[in-house]
Each structure stands twice: as C-alpha cells, then as structure tokens.
Length: 379
Image (cartoon, rainbow, N blue to C red):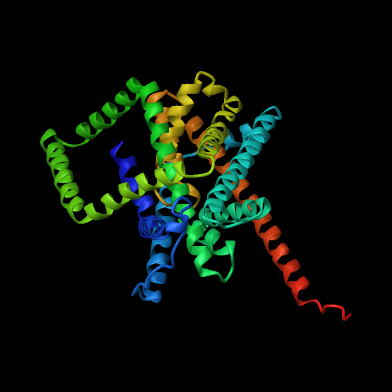
C-alpha cells in the first residue's frame, strides 16, 4: 500500500506547478472565480536543452524499466497458452465486448474533459474533444504523461493562454482520477481484507526467509530512516499536492453539474474494470475468480501502472500476475497470459483510436485551412 501511495505522489508531481497556477488564477480572477480560469504562466528560468535532455533520459529509463520487467516476467512464457486463447471462436465475443467497453471509456473521458473545458470558458466540439483524447492516450502509450500536454496545446493552436487554461482542466481531471483510485483501493481491500493481509504476510515471510532475521530488521530500519530523510525536502511538494487535491475537489463542486461529472468518473472507472472482468470467460482456469476477486486484481493493476513506463508495460503484468498467483492460486502461465491479453487489447485499442484521432484532427485542420485560403468570389 505504501508503494502505491509513493507511486501516486510521483505520478502527480508533474502537475503540481501547473495546478498551483490554476488554483491561484481562480482566486485572482474575481469575475470567473467559480469557473476556474487560468492566468498567464510566469516565466521560468529553465534551460530548454536541459529540460529536453532530462525528458529524454526519463523516457529511456522508463523504457528500460518496462522492457526489463517484461523480460523477467515472460522469460519462461509458453506461447501455446496465448495461441489457445485466440484459437477459440467463442472467446472473440468477449474480446469484442472488451474492446467496445474500452471505446466507451475513452468517449466518456472526452465528455468529462469537455465539461471541464466549458467551466474554464473554452468552447470545443464533441468531435474535437474525442479526437484530442484519442491522440493524448496514443502519445501516453509511447511517452508517459506527455499526452496531457499535447492535448492542451492542440485545443487552440498558437493560443498560449487558452492552452494554459486547458492544462489546468487536465490537472483537475487527474486529481479526480486520484480520488477514484483511492476509493477503488479502499473498496477492494475492504472486500478482500484477509487476502490482502495474507499476501503481505507471505511477501514479508519470503523476505525474512531470504535474509537472516537481523539483516531483515536492519534493512527495514534503514528504509524507514531513508524515507524520513527524503520526506523533509519533499514536504513542501507533498503539502502542495494535498492542497491541490482539495482545491481540485472544490473546483469540481463548483461545476455547472457536479453530479454529471461524478457520474462520468464512475462510468469511466466502471468501463476500465469491465475491460478486465469481461475477459475472464476466455480462461477456464479462472472460472472461480469472482467479481470481488477481479476488483481486487484490478485495484492492484491500477496501482501498478502508476509507475510511468510506455503503455504501462511491465508494472501491469507484474501486479496482475502476482495477485492472481499469490492470492487466488492461479497457475503462473494462466496469470501471465491473462495479463498479456488484457494489456495487449487495451494497447491495441489505444493505438487504433489514436491513429483515427490524428487522421480526423488533421483532416479537419486541412479542410479549415483550405477554406480560409480559398479566394473569395468578387461581387
């Protein structure tokens, strides 16, 4: 659980600076305080080349981590298990339903984002919001966390003020997902408390068996001291994170229809869960995994993907495999195949929708440019 909270903080830290601007601008703009407008971001003395180099290094590191985890998990994987899943025609009904639910989740994300844009007085069509959400998730699958910035920039190309306000809506959107994730973890752990305690106990027993008892306590004590030492310089960021979280909740309450926003959030996470649950009939060995069990597995996978790797490859598979094998007694080969199929379908859908979003977006941009450049008939 601590690892999930630490990953949650790391994932949200990139939004702290922009979130601070967003919520300060809400207080500064009395005319639209209830709608959350952005002000122009102050100038930052940051070397562009240094920032680009840092982003490239982070991308390389995250890619290496993801590839390393995938190799470690699937180094002894039997491909026949994967072929059997796609070799049965009856499974394609569930696969199509899974893809349809994934498509619905992305459409609901676009509706939720459009609602936030309207609260910031940014008008955008439903089609354009769907295109940009598709594009952003495609970019996120290659370069983690960059899709949100791209989405904000493409709302009004060349309009920095509008892009900054749009990025603020993404901050609120991410904070809403944080709240949903916390609720999901709480519900999953409550429903499967004994299984969670047993899993933690087995992991701690395995660590104690691997090293002498005194070494175990030395390692734990050193880790605690290290975390305490790290917490002091990071405390201002942690405090700003929780301040932004609270202000983000307040911004949602001030929306024109807060209940609709909450309903969209619930629908998005329900669709994400169904993308996992609907694949269970494809695996006869997982027939005894119930709805609550799948919710527990989904919560573990959702925490795992907070580690920023391309398309979530590695952490997703590790979390699902360890939960199914360690808690519910699934065979390692079946658990690995289930993780691979569920992640592969999600990634393939994101890629397809992203390409379609790019094609639709730039086609509309091209048609708009042609209309503006066409000679007007003289009277």
